[in-house]
Length: 298
Image (cartoon, rainbow, N blue to C red; front, side, top):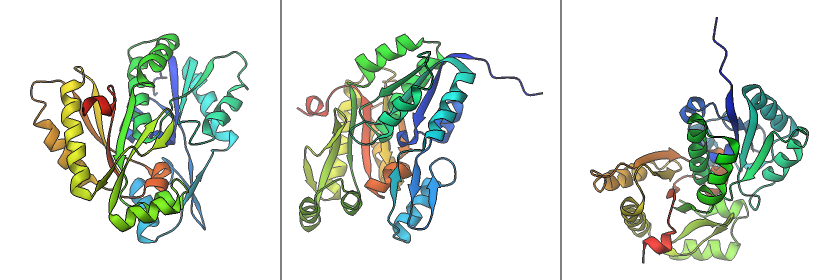
């Protein structure tokens, strides 16, 4: 007979825009509220019936437009109930409220649990920057931290110091999803500019532009070198990509040259369907918790 899972102090829920790898979700018993991916003739659900490979095949090779929507109430309620079976305290992390209605929906449905055991936190970012925060929280839970201790780390370290610097492969997906204006899209395509995408206080910004793929790769390698030098021991750098594993591994190989005497965790993780709708294939970037890139590149 299979042994019953031991109750923990805190159960962790995330929405699927965090893009965590399946092995991390399973290892840390993270509960996911999946986001639906809507194509013209069918709806699929991230982590349930569509992989990243299948998603990008439909998006790119079949050129099917896709969109996402806030998960239905049933998914939130099922996640909260499952979490309360695992633990007396529940923490749900959501992507930035400025980017989606998921946070408000989660807060609304958490009110069904009037004993205040469910706490919903807006991490003010998305994709693998969100995933890195969730990963760090999952490790704290594994170490036996209380919800109060975790909330303190979230508010005073993880969220205010979460960084994401990335490039998309093709601006047409941001344009299609309404994330950039048409004029910006046309100018970017005409002059082969590669806008740097970052998230500041929950909002998408583009602080700089680079011309050509070589320039953006040089920027990410240089930024990575500075991160290796600046981050404390045992911190994590994630190389994020969407169907761009060769370039991601090129950056990883480059950064490992600077790490022989420093114990940092360097991970290559892929952006999933919910964010892939907006960025398309070819995205490439770095995410970490630590110094602002402007301070690193002075």
